[in-house]
Length: 294
Image (cartoon, rainbow, N blue to C red):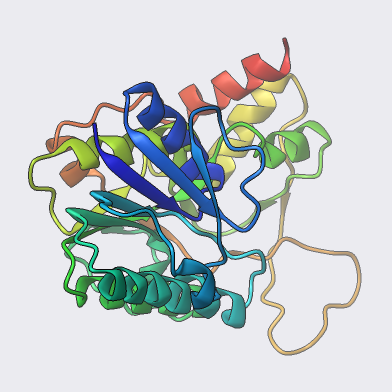
């Protein structure tokens, strides 16, 4: 039985907390408003962006999982949560004399800027061009440079219960395929996110970096067409994409091709012994579709 803190106990952190409590661990869920945490998770009201609220963390923490996420998609929010928030937690541990066995941090594959369908793994170059990747990489380096043993998990796009917007867009006929070369996407189901973290926490000596994606990088339009077939609706239309650039678009809206386009390998994670519950988007979305039909 371990004493575990989940800092930023939200979508992924809550799922992880449930699994850890079921195994008999003592788990604290830290967030601004801890109401609604699963039974057995000890609530801890604190604000990661306010170091004053972190002065009385539980003592004797053996493992920490930082799964916080910003509430806005802008540079200020990313810096505040991922860089400053993490820094405040690390400072609090040092001030309180905490010696966690390991700190886990959920980062993102957005740190990779590859955009031509290249395969990437843990050894690939990280030269992000967007603020989100820049801040994530800054936080990774901050943690790996701290005095605490650490493991980074770079997650792909997270979907799962409560995050079925793509299904609804296909159902309503609002999903559109952009023309041009294939656009690859990298996903992971929320339940696999939580289980991957639990798996890594149980390893005697995990490495400092893993990519967390399912076993099949999927071409975006292939996913949309598969969902349309499952729903029994027309396949999404293909429209000419545009790059809006600095000027405003005129006329009817057209799909905009995403900047990111890469295929992420999970070979290192699989080699560590992890077995996916949802190895591809098909199993994951099938589970969501079954749930929505009941």
